[in-house]
Length: 257
Image (cartoon, rainbow, N blue to C red; front, top):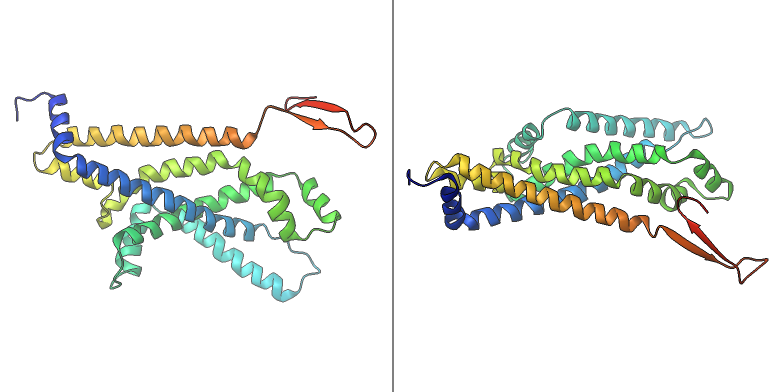
């Protein structure tokens, strides 16, 4: 074994332990994907709640209730953004879930979702406040409620604007699932360490893991960029007809008319 070159050892590990690496990839991607989606939904609720407007005409009860809810939201965001996910995983799994018969992958999903939700909440809040206030005022002027304005006018634009940040969170989650080995989740890092242990080929095994992580994040990044371009629509479009001239065609480029 000692006479083998670096690349021969790498190939030996791949041949011997490829089922471990495949399992690690599957667990990593499953937790990262589901955790990002659930975290987005959590962040959406928290972000929208933090942007609910209040006025002097609202009842004291409504304003007091919103103040309490906003305080809880801010506390949640600050705590989970201000502490490492490895510590959060240990506290939640060995504390909150202690004595509870729960699948470790479900616990990992909950941990990643809660952590991601804190970051998503601020991303979504930033996307909401980035939308021009004139659009909100215009929606209110035609009789739309705050809920209708958010769902039909503000959020569709805000979500498109924050798509790069959402994609970045997904990529971060792919890498950060490695900290879940602290509670024994069999993700990619955990499996790589297991493959390295028998023959003490830690350098080779973690090199394989690094390449896999890069391939995963690179591929996901390119797919997300393709989705963003699809959401942008065509670079130019045609408006057919008008009240004065139904046969008219107006060609509009997104860079100008």
